[in-house]
Image 1 (tube, rainbow over the protein chains, first blue to last red):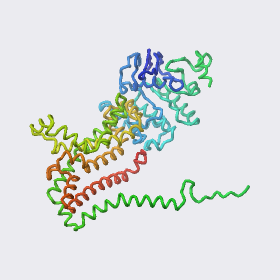
Image 2: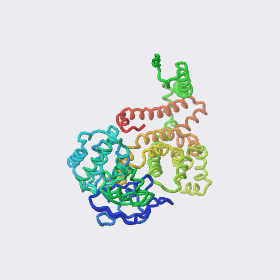
Image 3: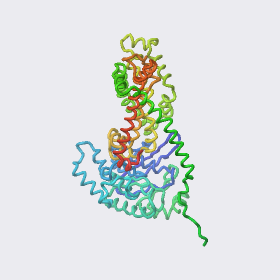
Image 4: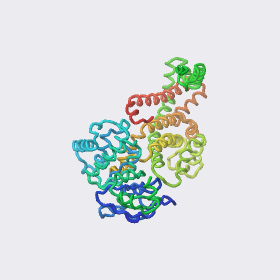
Length: 239
Length: 287
């Protein structure tokens, strides 16, 4: 599903987190929002997910105006920076949460929920951890469980806030590959936020460089490297 | 290489044995003197004339009425304050709105106002000399010197306990889990019951126990508002005082002992719950 961002702006009190920004995201793309902290990238992601509402501007999902849709109606799979797994539930219950939260008519029967959770556990290559609690998992495992939980609701898109931020370098590399594979298998339009230019360049099809609430440049990683549009982009991607 | 002795027998953070003993001793003496001794005294005084006398004292109609009154007040006040405490803590920690700091101060008000003053406020507001109070009395709905007044005084005094216990825990937990549940399609109520409530249940239990202890033990505000009418508006603490002033020391101390036992019972209940759910507590790392 393609996403259109039209003249989106966000103010918190008197501070402008986002100047009006516009951005088309083609269906099935893997997009990185790249920028330093305070660049507005997380705000933009949260607006897409419906966790913040824009001060002005529109968001279109598949051509339909989604600006006023509630979080629940958007069906966006969201992976949080610290994963936000439910501490008091097992991995199985975490992943099944979205399915069990559906209205009774649309809720799959318990056996079907069990099958789907197992399929997702296989997808993230952790088939045997269903009975564990989040604090019994490593950082990398938690991230993958969070991804499986987001995928369980059969989302229309996948939004990830610094998905590799809390991990060490080795695990980071592995999981980057993991996300790429899951993206390619599901074909979901995926947007992730990162401040790590190497990560953005290596993983994304399309990189959106942001600074101070503005989009500095949008392009393929190679194009941005070869032809940085501004001094900021050159400095930031050179690091 | 010179031979360096690395085998210090105790960790570096440990004090010398003498100081350790001294510190532990002071702590133990303090606990014995200020916590344990008064409690024991209450029970010793209650049983001074034997079990029979103590039980007889409890069978006095005034004592029975006071016990009934205190239990009824606690049974109503604690659930109400638990509900409103959760609501207040939820609003303060999960939403941003103007005058939030003012609301927090307001919640703390009952802690800073003397209970006697709180009782007087109610008397002034609902007493026979006020317009509102006069109208209520004329319509046969007296508040002061009656059950509703005692309930209001108890509600006021015990309001902060649950909210105060929950707010720091909920601030520490942040909103991420609730937001995650939202993105997974859960409704507000579902999020509250499946995510928020399980995360705060231990803090809530502490808050409710503290609230309950204070609701049963409150003296000042209730003494002013209730008028301490025997058999009608006397609660256990006010009845203890009345017995004591009438030199009925066995009755006074027996009732006080029952009050103390109710407090010990709540503590026991808390420990029991913690012990039974030790695994889950460890898994979720809540206190």
